[in-house]
Length: 400
Image 1 (cartoon, rainbow, N blue to C red):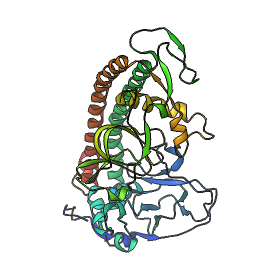
Image 2: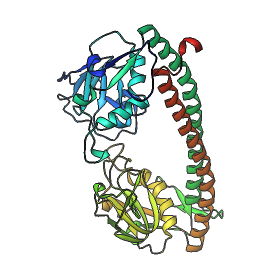
Image 3: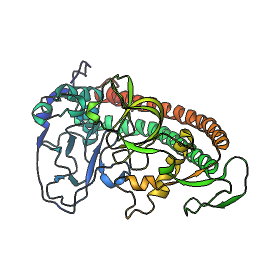
Image 4: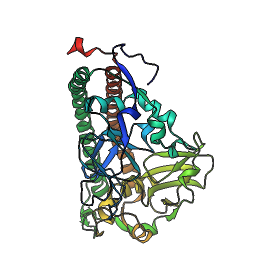
């Protein structure tokens, strides 16, 4: 399995002796499952951050039974696999593997197969030009060796991990609740400043139902009169690791590029993509590259680019997408963006609002970052604990 030594009483075998590939299709109407790196196999509709559309015709989807191992071939090297607790169907792009024996505890096997040492083995056996294109096929995966204790010890390890990881998960959940509260407070402060100002002025109807009233000396101006709206021309595959310039793509992550097409103050948002429509926004002043489906707002006139960033990122989703026939539009169109109305204060007031919001959001963002670091460390500890337990470095017979 790895360089980690396991107890002599444990038996070494290969995954190919424990599982076999199956492909049972044609179960339209069954529960659709998905595979997550952090959660394993769960119902797809239980998460709001899965932006891969489920096709109407599911006849090619594969049946998964409770206890089956489901592997995302393209992301196995990241740990995107798991033993399913659900019966349902999964994408034909996944590998479905059925146990050939009942002589193991499924909870232990789930933890073992997602442990660090085995994930490293998946990476070594994955093939492709670059990590984003790596795939793990069963012919290679089945050669991975694992060390297994007797079933009663497997069960004891699984019980130990259930107990100890639950404690860590509780701490993580508390920090996630704190982050949610901080972000809600941040958003409330930003919304108030952008709709009421910081001077306590008299108000008037903005003419936009979801915005309500704004200070009576502010102007409601469509975006097309405030800046230019263009898109990038590059594809994500053209990113360069360690490139000199930021490369804004369709997701939340900012890639790097050796080239740039823009050199200005700008605000960016994807027209579609896995980040979620109307949820990802960037502000930058300098040289950068942009994906062909990323909108770039630049050449600001009568408005601060930073102020525009705050307003667009706060209200675009609520206002511009309100007329959509669906809860979340699949993509943003240029006419919709051009007609999006911005509440524009006088220049000096814009600068004061931006300074106020920069200070306010920086404090909130620092607290969020601290909580996120705690979560990252807790997850690392959780992963290390699981690896130690499933490789026998912790003798649960002594700590149970």
